[in-house]
Amino acid sequence: MKKITHSLFLFTILSCTSNAAVNDFCVADLKGPDSPSGYQCKPPNTVTVDDFVFSGLVAGNTTNTFNAALTSAFVTDFPGLNGLGVSAARLDIAKGGSIPMHTHPAATELLIVVEGQITAGFMTPSAVYSKTLKAGDVMVFPQGQLHFQVNSGNGKATAFLAFSSANPGAQLLDLLLFGNSLPSELIAQTTFLDVEQVKKLKARFGGRGIDYS
Image (spheres, rainbow, N blue to C red):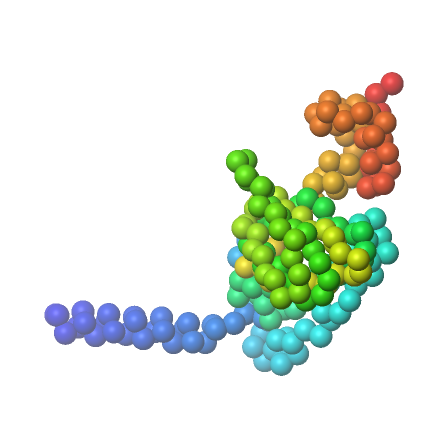
């Protein structure tokens, strides 16, 4: 009986090991739905080397409200990342530009400065951690923490980002506050801003809705 039990145990271990080896990766089938555990796998016979290569991490267009551009290599751009818990991006910030206060609910972020000067930081309820970074500097922003990046130099700034999720997500504070349909008066009451300031910011960030008379 002990021999049978031991044999069954070994068979189970070997079976699990074999399945793990077969399932070392799961290239995303982007035609299907996303889920908390990621996308479903493409059929193995349709996977190619191109699923594991991304060639689009180039400079983005910084002509916008923030004078900045984020070029992503997330699972939706790079199917080979599915289920691996990593992703990347390129950050370009023109002179005077910034990435405003935001969070990544699903990932820790690593900022690697390669050109220019970036002042970056994050905050907790009890402290602020901010530093001016130059080429070669690396800073980490823990998952879920409110953080920012500002070009504080005299020219353009470039950085590469790494995330601990294939799909880190992002919530920009400015867009959440002023890109919605809440009445301006209500936003003013909850942010202690002047109503006219709120209306100006809503116009800038695409907010809409009927204001109180």
